[in-house]
Length: 378
Image (cartoon, rainbow, N blue to C red; front, top):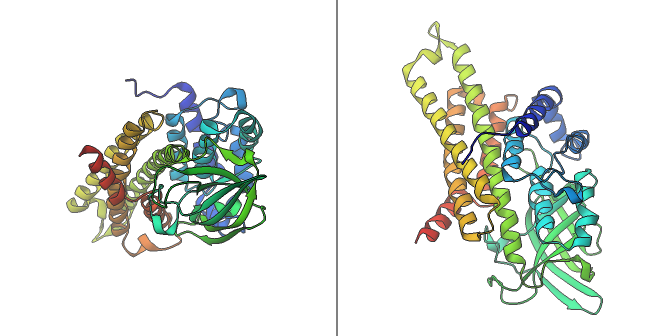
C-alpha cells in the first residue's frame, strides 16, 4: 500500500494551512466563537471557493470525487486551526449520507447546494436513553396518505443551531432497541412542530436538542428504504469517527509543538526547563503517542470507505479508542508542563485540551469503542 500523499492532496493541505495562518488566528477564532452564529460565515464561503465543501461528492454533482483520506487531510488542519465551522456535520456525515443513500433527484437538488455553501445540515441520530447506541430510537414516524408524521426528541445534535435541514432517524417498525425498523428523514428547520434548544459546547462549538411534535414531511423526505436506515446512519457516523480521529491528530501535533516551544523558552533556576531530563522524557512520550495516533487515524481513514460494515467498524472503533487515550495523555501532559498557564483561556493550549475532550466524547468515547472493538474480536 502506498502511504505517500499525491501532489493534489499536498496542495490541498498547504492551501488550508495558509488560510488558517492568514485569516483564522487564535484571536479571530475566539471572536467567531462569541458571535451569534458561532463560526465565520466568511470562512465557510471561502471553503466553498477552495472546493473543500464539495470534496467528497461525485463530479456529476459538482464535487471533486474525494475519499476518506482526502477528508483526513482536511480534518487534521481543522484540528490544528480549531476551526468552528460545521464541516464534520454538513460535509462528512450528512453530505456523505445523502451521497450514499438518497434518491437521484434529491442528490441533484441538495449536493451542489451543499458544495456551494448554500445549505448546512445536521445529523439527529442520538437520543438520551440510547447514549451512543444508534439502534436505540424511540422517535417515531407514522405513514399516512400525504406522507409521514414524525414525533420524538433527539439530543446533542451537533451544529444544529446553524443547520437548514436535519437528517432524523425515526422508528417506523419494531421496538425501541430493534436494529430493524429505523428510517431516515430529511426535515426542514422551519417545519411546523420542529423546535431546537441550543447551547454551547465545552470546546466553543454549538449543539442543540431537537423536539419533533407531529412534524409532517412528504414521501420524498424519506432517504433510503423504509426500515433500513440504521446501516446508512452507521456508515455516516463511522466516517464521522474517522474524521474526528484525524482532527484529534492535528490537535495532538499542535499541542506537542506548543509544549516543546514552551519548554525551550520558559526558564527556571537560570535554565530553560526543557533541559530537565524528566520533562524531556515526558515530551518524548508525547511525540511517540502522536506518531501512533497518526497511524491509527490513517487506518480509520482507509477503512472508513469500506463497504464491509464489520471491517469498517473494527477499523474506526480501534482508532477512536486508541486516539481517545492518546489524546487524554498528551492533553494532560501539555497542560501540566505549561503549569498554571495551561488552563488559562488566553492560551490556545487550554482550547486544544477542551477540544480533545469533546472529540473523545463525540460519537462514542474511548470506553465505548474499546468495548465495541473487543466484542467484535470475541
